[in-house]
Each structure stands twice: as structure tokens, then as C-alpha cells.
Image (cartoon, rainbow, N blue to C red; front, side):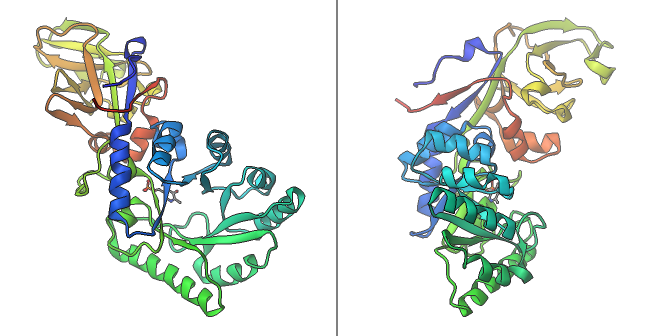
Length: 380
Ligand SMILES: *Cc1c(COP(=O)(O)O)cnc(C)c1O
């Protein structure tokens, strides 16, 4: 294995398996109807996986469309990848228009002010620009409310130098509620049809995130925006991954200290855990500043030598403690797995998110905030 051996320099590290990532891109391409455009969503540093390597791996698989949240993310990505297409999900500040035009970004649009600003910038740079119109079909976030969407579309298509390349919306609960998703899907389809009645058609239509694409059973038009599942993670725990998507992120640390602790002593801030019988407590040099969520206090679980042990006491900024029972030969430096496999055991981001009372997205976005990523590139 060609895994960079940087582990020892850090008290914790992320292992990003680019082989599994490639596998997931292959699964995606195989699963989707041919001709479907894939925009891989790589916002928030590719959900914590490391955006440059994630995009680099995808480009090798022939994927050319990517989505980020912010202008800042888009500009950084453009500087590394001059020829990919970059969808910017949040670009509604008119003052950003010149950057959007200059960096050849494709923003989602939902205000005339933004169109005005883009038109001015496009004139100034003497360039034309692609945009996608974003419609709100029930998410209640950004986007033109669907009953007003046709008017908006009819105005938007008349701007010079601006080409409306796509029309899109976003599901709010495609992983859990079919009937609400269907309502959203129908509202979106209706806008597509009504625009067609005016002779207006676009190259791309899209509404599906990962759950919309893989789980909802609803048609995904000719374009999908997949994030979480391309990293091999299901949007929630207890959803079956039947496609062979493989998790890409592992997160590891090592024991920094271990001692025998007598019954009755307390562990950590706030004395929230009292040792019930003589035991061994291992300290792991990782805490909420590293992105190990404080809500995992007295709830988290880790793997050491392939066995599960509970996180006891509060997760502190830089430390957490694990009750390793009577584990005899535990030593300083022993590897601890926070996310990933060890031996026959595995802790998934999905499981950890449930223990933390959140979703896997938040787990991977936070994981390893203070550390480095190591990349597994090929298996020998
Ligand atoms: C984040 C995001 C996605 C990707 O969602 P996943 O659930 O990670 O697949 C798609 N579209 C929009 C607008 C998003 O904000």
C-alpha cells in the first residue's frame, strides 16, 4: 500500500482511500442512465475528504462537473482545475459577479439583482456566462418560489451574455419522506412543462441529491448532484447501501497515556462519569477542537486492536478518555480508530453520527479539523 507514512507526526490523522473513491465514481456512472450528467458536490473541502484529491480522482474517471457552496471554494478549485465546470450553489451577492465571470463559474441564480450584476460584469469582461436557475419547491431555502418561477424564467432568458443552461431545485427529505419528495418533484416538473409551453427548454434539469438519486425512486431528469453517497456514506444510519459504495474516510489516533483507575474515581470535566469498578482508562489526544463532537461525551465508541471501547466522561478540547477495562497490554502509541475498520470491527460515520445525535455530513465535515489527510492511492 502506498499510504503516505505521515501518521507518526500527528496525534490523529485522516486516511482518505482514493481507491474506494474511484470505485464509488464507477458505481455512480454505472448506476445512472447513460447520458446523465453528474455534478459531484465537493463543498466544505469535499465533506472533509480533501477537495483537490477528490476532484483529481474524479477527473481521472471522466467526471467534469463539480459543485461547491461558496465563491471562495469555487475560486480555489478553479485555480487548481482550469477546465472543469464549477457549479456554485450559493452565489447571490451582486458584488461577486465580476469574480464569477472572471473565473468562469456557473452560479445557481434566483434573483434579478444577481442577473443584472452578472450582465454588467459579463459586458465588462466581454464574456458570456452559464447559469442555472434555482427554484424552491418546498425546501424553503434559496430559490425562486415555484409559483413565481415561470415569470422569473421568462425574464432571465432575455439577458444578453447570460445563458441559462439549467433549471434546478432541491429535495428537503428525499432520504425519508416519499410523498413530500413527490410533491416537490411534481412542482418542479410542472415548471419544466410550463416553460416548455413558452418554447423555453434548457440543457439540464436537476433536483436530486444523493438520496434523490439513489433512494427516492423518483426520476432524476438528466443531471444529478451527488455528495454524501459518492463518499460511500449513506445520508442516515439504517439506510441500506446496496450498490457497493465504499466508505472513503477513516480517522485514527493513538493512545497517549493509560493508567489503572480505582473504583469510585471520576473521569473528565464535570465529573460526569464515575468508574464503577477498578479499570484501565486510556487517554486519546483528540477532542472537540479536532472535530470529535462534544456530544459524543459518554456516548462515543472507539476501536483499539479491533475491539470496541466506550468514550467515558466529557470530550474535552484536546482529549478524551476511553474505558479499556482490563486490557492488559495496552501501550502508549497503540492505534485508535474513531471512524473506519480495525480487525473485524468497524465504526461508520453513520453510526458515529447517530451516537452524536447528528447526521454523517456533520461528522465528516468536522473530522480531523486540526490534522492532515493521508491518501491511499493504489493497492498493490
Ligand atoms: C449539498 C448539496 C447537494 C448534495 O447533497 P448530498 O445529500 O450530499 O448528496 C446537492 N445539492 C445542493 C443544492 C446541496 O446544497
